[in-house]
Amino acid sequence: MTLLRNPGYWRWSAGVQLNRLPATMAPLAFTVLTTATTGSYRLGGVMMAVFVAAEMVGAVPTGRLLDRVGPARGLVVLLPLVAAGLFLLAAVASAGAPDWALLALAIPPGLVAGGLNGGFRTLLAGTVTEEELPRAVSVDAMILEGVIVGGPLLVALLATSGPAVPVLAMAVVALLAALLVPRRTVQRDPQRTVERQSIPVAACVPWLAGLFTVGLLLSTIEVGLLPLVQRLGAPDSATAIVIVVLCAASITGSALYAARGKVGDPRLFLAGFVLGGIVVSAGFGWAGLLGGVALIGLCTGPLMAVSSVNLQKLLPERRRSEGFSLAFTVQASGFGLGSLAIGVLPVWLCPLLGVLAALVSCAMLVARPRRAIGTPSVTS
Image (tube, rainbow, N blue to C red; front, side):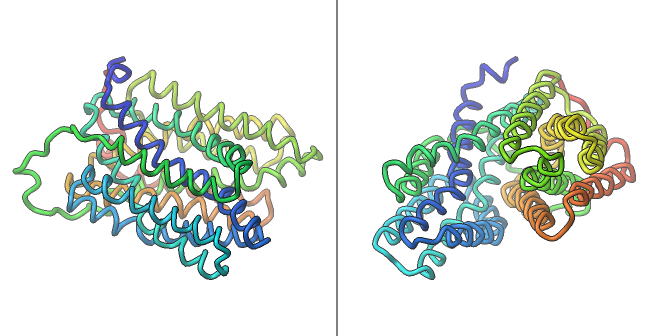
């Protein structure tokens, strides 16, 4: 597999994982910080909500800025700004600042960080060949699972040295990500990038809907784990079993997709989401819960990969950072809506929202010409 021998890809991968790590550390890091400095763990939750809201607001403007100045150049400047904001937040919290100050200081790094994933994703197109791209996205999804799990574990370890240390570590990680931003990428064709083309929103909607579905269905599973296992009469500790199954299935699905090396038909993965969501909702005991979760996990990485690859084909080269930032925001909004649903709807009903979203996405893809759905399969 030529991808594994591409040093540029591994530099990009290290940089993007370090860029993602602060976001996975933030929920627990903010809670640890506010509990120690103000005595309120709830303030940490509110701070995280403010941070995420700022990311969503700033994602597209930041992505647009990266497109204008160049993703590599922009990331090298913006990542240190994120680090500076986190350093300031940790310092002010340690000095005993009031609650409103902590909430206000969570906004600037969130505004800047929102579009950075879009910038990194744009650089991937110039780091690997078109034939390597499906595998590159799949391998990245596998590594991302480790980052998601590793972030909170790192916070728990660092918190033993002081409540502000995890937030300081988030800042250091952002600086390290800036050092690993790829500098050597494929040059643009100047004749294709003289004019700033518009984003074909209508053509992108089915792929954005697929990413929204991933966020919506996964959040109803992850956030609703406790009531799902309690419905089976199991102890709270049994949630760990479901998490392990979900993560293992997600890594396996991405690995199989990467080994195959083809773009594939997204409707197959959406069908897996539909079946898995229905089985989880129906509550067929442990077999139903674990089987449905495993099926969803197996389809998660491939669906994200095929949506990402097809979006890249549609986005104008000079607006890719903006387009990918929008895609990440859409996926985040799906996750937020799923989390909200767990709080206001019966637990059995929540996975069916993801099922509905998958059916709508599939219907939009069926309505499009075949060549707009699968895109030519590529192998490396």
